Image 1 (cartoon, rainbow, N blue to C red):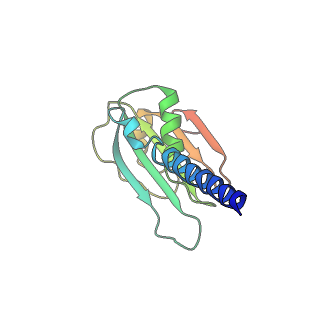
Image 2 (image 1 turned 120 degrees about the vertical axis):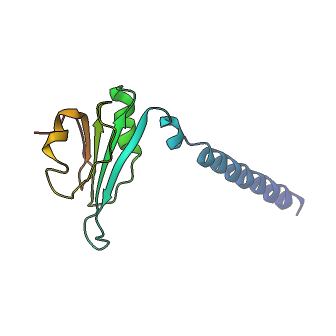
Length: 135
């Protein structure tokens, strides 16, 4: 009888330890604050289709031109299974809001020379990161 109580307390301590470990790991994940001072969101577009593919388009002014953080920023943006996410990174020459549309070209062609990188996540989750506006 005494050995079953010891086993019960050992299992209880292990479960409590696992719950604490999982909680700490979940709450300590980096958020969008790691991008503070590196970008300024100019405009966003999301179609209203909740039953089919969701299209998300973002126009971001890059204050830091590091390719690594741009790719990391694109990975952090929301993505829906069978949906598409596109992030356009603009240089410092743009400071106005951009009107985005769901189809290519996503904005006026006069803005294309200001695009320094494009991040795209396809419906199946494949990632494409290219410099400039995609051809």
